[in-house]
Length: 258
View 1 (tube, rainbow, N blue to C red):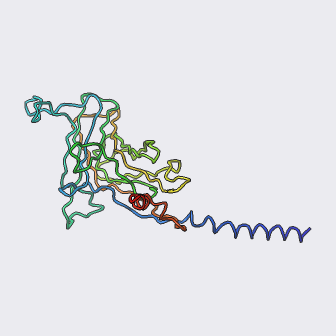
View 2: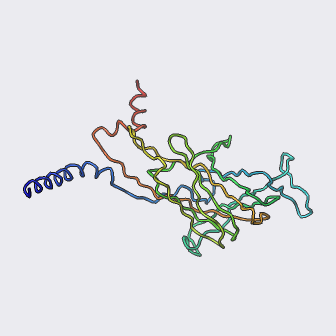
View 3: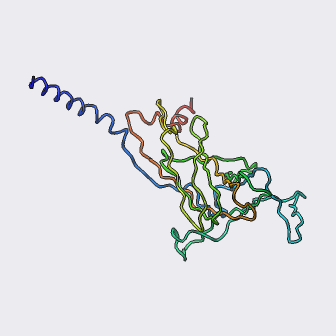
């Protein structure tokens, strides 16, 4: 009986040795921190950030209380946006050697409630200003951004799209704090970032941010600032015999001549 049991244990150990190396490559990880957007603005910025708001957004008024009109004769509406010379000192210090800015939102609604403001990118060279989804490299594990809050009871959501076209909404965090704070959200494992078939890589894309107000909080004359959108992402890709034939760019190049 002891001899049979010993043989069974040996078979189990041999099976583990034979099987585990086959899966070890799939579990390899190479985490990298990548900046998707600096929010520094400037002529060389790849994106222009646009806003869209829900109902009850206020009109911009002058010192006499009269609505301000734009060049087309239409009333200007909140939110207003601008790049301002401000940054989190915890990251860049108080006297940075480079020119730094942050992207600011100045908002105001006519009434309290679940109001929202969307912040989404368009390509800087796109005259049509169509929403552009920023591709995220690798298989993203987490996303973080520095946010300046005025201790208002608001919160921020981030929208991500997977390769199937499904948009996932993640709560980045509350902004009921004073000053700068780094907000971070982990990307859950149930959000698909790989295919079973080749090419297996199927990364996510960033769609937009949404700032929500709460019914218990005031919504008049508020400011929010954003700086440095980053991701922590796994850049490891398994290599195999013929892996170049699973690269979409390589496939396009070799089939273009045919």
